Length: 214
Ligand code: SF4
Image 1 (spheres, protein in one colour):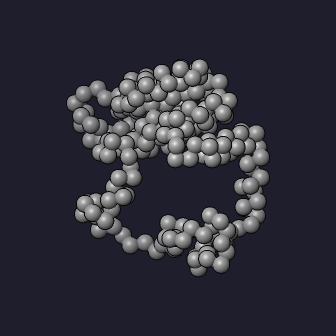
Image 2: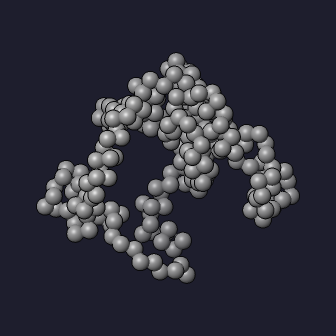
Image 3: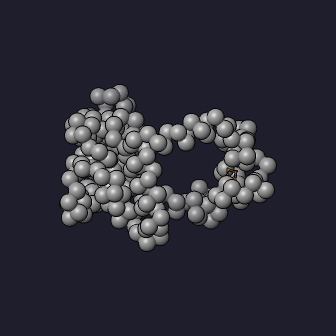
């Protein structure tokens, strides 16, 4: 049984979303916008005017406004790369998604976009070499098992001086390490979920059905 925690109400408990159009009279009692730290908000706003941030924010707005509900995420990503002006794109992919990465790479090539793809098992370093115990490996230590190496993926893409990285299906946690070490901004094309065909929203949508039992 999970330990009970004291949790205050936040946006995850909101059903009105009145911050979307600043309907102040409809803010819920616990509304985070109503009690926002004005100084922190101004600080965040200021950051959007810094070089890379301004380009990321403007390009994201362009793609969202022009292709909302019309383009798939793959199309949006290509459009984003082109409009952002990335000359070289890094692809940090899971080796379980090399086919999909290959298709995406072909699409980039067709659009005249240079790319450099690095798979997660780069370097073929055995898991025990970073202290992972056999019980935390898939073959329980019976076979040579290369670890996922997101830090190395990031380091290679940093060396290649990519302007923008696209993450494809890195494991939970490995994605955090990649983002931590990648120098170029990173966008996500595929979120890994081996059970749902890479659609983590499925259990959230079905929470009141089968998944409530799990
Ligand atoms: S900021 Fe306020 S209105 Fe917006 S989602 Fe959070 S609680 Fe709801």
